[in-house]
Amino acid sequence: MIRIKRSTTISALAAAALGLLAAPSAQAQSADMTFFVTSNGPGKGADLGGLEGADAQCAKLAQAGGASAKSWRAYLSTQAADGKPAVNAKDRIGKGPWQNAKGTVIAKDVADLHGASNNLTKQTALSEKGEVINGRGDTPNRHDILTGTQPDGTAFAAGDDKTCKNWTSSTQGTAVVGHADRQGLRDDEPSKSWNSSHPSRGPDGGCSQADLKSTGGDGLLYCFAAN
Image (cartoon, rainbow, N blue to C red; front, side, top):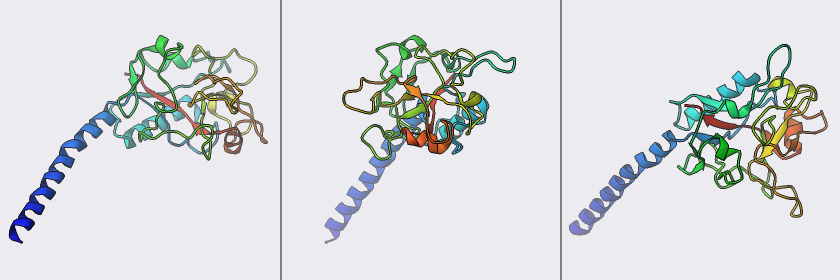
């Protein structure tokens, strides 16, 4: 009996030691994360508090995910308005490369990110927690990601609102979104762009939380480490 107890104790201690050795690896991976999809939005639809508020949301969630020691930027464009020039999403996010919470590289640089060979899919566009974002066929579908951006990463021309008043409105305007899972809404629909699939729409116009949810969104963002 004594030998069995001692053996069991040693086995338990060995298992615990192995667990402790494995833990830093997962933590290190999270610390090296340079890209994620937000697990949630601020909750006010497309009113993100402008680019500054969106960046703050990225930074807050990155800190919770263990990757705070970076300058985080939301992948968002703004349109020229009120005497201020447009901002291109691709110019906000640094040079790359970028990897998710599991260590998988999604793009080597800005050109790769906006090219046909990027590695951004439902399985790689993970949240800061390393979790897959619900896409087509999941309940609820949350694959619409706010971008306000053209496929090449540049802003839309001034005029028709594509950014819910440059991310300050939850009532007026529309916002162009991308599909994190690269899927259309039907089997016969072609795959959609990760950053420029369609404008938001809904009973209130396109910028409220209810509007975003009605077409498969939840006010989520792409976040990139710019340094």
